[in-house]
Each structure stands twice: as C-alpha cells, then as structure tokens.
Length: 331
Image 1 (cartoon, helix red, strand yellow):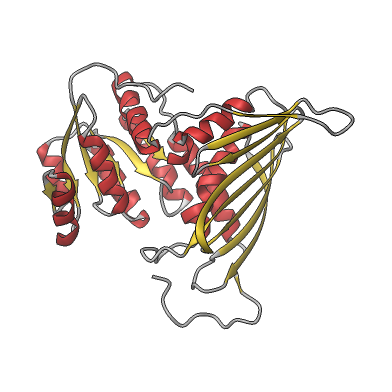
Image 2 (image 1 turned 90 degrees about the vertical axis):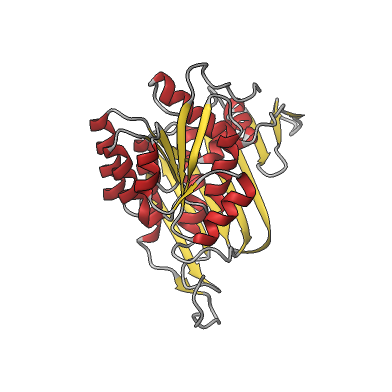
C-alpha cells in the first residue's frame, strides 16, 4: 500500500480549527506539522481548552469564530460538538471558506442537506471527517475486496464508556463509522435496517446490534457497545472467492482464499501501511481544496450515513432486562 499523498505543491493555505477538545487539538497538531499549511489558530469558547491548545501546540487561539475568520483563513476543520456543526459550517461557507466537518456532518439529515446545498452554491470544498476510511487496515481491506462479489460484512466496534460523551449514544458515536464503511466497501446504498438497541448503564443506547441489507444484496451487521472493558475494532468480509479479516487497531489484515472441495484453503497476511489516519485525511482534504477535485468523503456521503444512523435510532432503545434505568446522567 502506498503512503498518504503529499500535499500538492502550491502557496501555503491558511487553515483554522474550530473546537479545542480532544479531536480538535489533534487536528491542530497535525496541521501544524504539514508542509504548505499555515495554522492560523484554534477556536474554543472555554479558556481551559485554549490554554491546553497553547501548551500542547503553541498555536494562537481565539475565543470566537468571528475572531478566527477576521484573521483570514482559506479552510477550516470543524471539531466542535455536533449540535454546532450546522451553524458553524454555514457561517464559514458563507464567508467562502472550505470546510472539513467531523462526523456526523450534523445533528439531523435536514441540517446536513442544508450544509451540502450551501457549499455547492458557494463553490467551496466540503468534506466529512469519516477518518476510519483512512486507516491503512481499512484501505488494505478495500483493496483486497476490489472487484470481488461481496456476500456479507461483519464489524465489531466496542469499548468502555467514554466519560466525555453526554449527548449521543453508541450509534452516532461509534456505529456511524461502520455504516460509512459498509456503504464504501459495497459501493451500494443501504436499503433495509434492522436495529436492536438497549440502554444498560447509560441514558442513551449503549448496546447496538444493527443488521443491514444493501441495494446490491450484501448482508451486513454491526456489533457495538460501551460495555467492553477494552477497545476492539474488527472487520470481516466474505466474498465468493475470499474471506478477509482485519483488526483496525493492530492493523493486521489476513486473507483466506483458494477454497477447495475438501475444505482446505490458503491464507496470507496482506501488506498494510503505517500512515496516521488523521494526517492522511487532512492531507486529502487540503489537496481537494487546492485542486478543486471531489473530496474523499463528500457531504452527500456524510448525509447518507447519518440518515441510516438516524433510521437505526427510530426504534427506541429498551432498558436491559433485570436492570433499572440509570439515575445518573450519561456524561
């Protein structure tokens, strides 16, 4: 697998980051080290977040979005809370600024579509931050199943409860990654959704078993929860000619092939790159800005994955059997 593409050689782009939480700080860290990029600064209304960004990155900080825009930016990455994506994105787009917005693109499908329409009208680049597509193991899986007749996909994405989470459950926090991957792997839309959701220890769904069928006939499922004491990120893809297994954390991808009537088969480990997914994602975004090419994850794709996630949430979660609903807040 080849490494992430270098930034297109051209005059430096002035880029800002909106949101100085964990993800936004990582955006700023990566941007500060990219050639051909001037990190103008990072915006956050919280003083402690701005102080942390200064300590970790040494960049300029702003208390308001207007201050950043007045400083002059060509592009921004939005890593603010999801409920702010719509307002912030429209403000930036209205100023002619190119936008990468973290997943999910917005709180609702309608808001997402409004962002897409505004970017199209303004002629600016809009990309959605589905960073898992840039995981080298995911890229290796995608290459391995290229031109294959895919039959089924299974994805496990589990881990402990994240203390910072307060306004969404596992479907929006975790499963939306894998909804995007199913659509990307199959290059087909999801047409049937069968969710099973439960609230075990949190006020929002913290266990989700999601089943899907794509327009092309692929059966897929996602197993996700906040109850597992360790993180696990695994993907399996069965095709007519292969069975591919990938661990997205250790970045090991194995391919089974050459199935014979006696049950024997061959197995091999596939080469996997070493790129940092976030760095590869930001480079892809900035190259799309420079070249005016279609970004790696379009706004329309971000809206489509959000729409499926919201369909999963339309079935209200149930309290786990034998447990009372929690009294404490999820966050």
